[in-house]
Image (cartoon, rainbow, N blue to C red; front, top):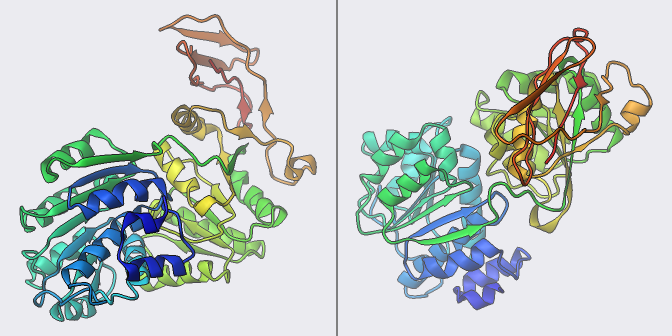
Length: 451
């Protein structure tokens, strides 16, 4: 569907066209007409599908219409008030939403306040005092300013919760409830989430009134234009493998995901020893440092950004060529969000994962979620050239056991290594494997069983 068919205001269409967009994504085509009618909305769509524009564009349209269509967003609310509140989990996502609002509303001049922690609150308070149309905020800092008397939510007409499942994971649920309690009962509410667990459904039932539901691309779906692969490598050899791949694959713009903040800093130091420019992004960094790292990465001054899962959602940077899962996440859905940083807006990209022996269960959980095997890489020049310090995995093609639904099959190998295999259910699935025995430090993938 073309944006022109969505009956958005002409100044908004002009801004969208200047950004090079003419056709709406599926979530935008379905959500925008619902929001324009004033109906509550529950939307489930994976990262990179255009959710931000799906609520920003109709919000700007309604502000434009409420002003009588005079080319502006309309008179601001009273000091400390706003008409629209957007809640999101991280500073980076809040900044991105605010930037999208400014870009799409460049011909409307909406008054906006961006509120998040990690920086001084005085500029945020001053923006609120001047009166705003749209408040974009993270829950913690917003609640803090509310308790100080700097924010009045009694004039809010539209409430948006973006990345609701992520806010739930980060422990914001109580803060969200406190904020929502201060918003008028008569309002339009939109809840966007990449996944739809029971907790999110309960939250939606408590907040939304007769909502329309939009579901696009389930969380288990990864983009078809992402080339996914996995390297089996011992933990101590991951730094060498990463350096070889960054140089050998000419990674022009790559995000490397680690499990911990200290791990991200350590990987940056290791890359720098190999002469590779890299910066870290995680919650221990100051807001200025985080913003500087993102700007350097966006401007290609730094080709590698090493980040925790703070960057797995809400970071919209064009032309990311590679995503590297340096540490495999134990949350399969997070894998989908991570690799969704590449191949955006119809482009192509590559997702590489490093898997040591302890991470095999994580890999199996990911493959169960996406319902297919990830290609195992053993023929890369890194292996063929016997690069120093890189473990070459031993992989045996699977041999189908006799199906015994509901039972477990086990066997003994010659060196005393016990392998236990969950027999796949009829229709397919991924087996689980336990490893034991063998020489210390040597990784050997004994068996993988596919139904």
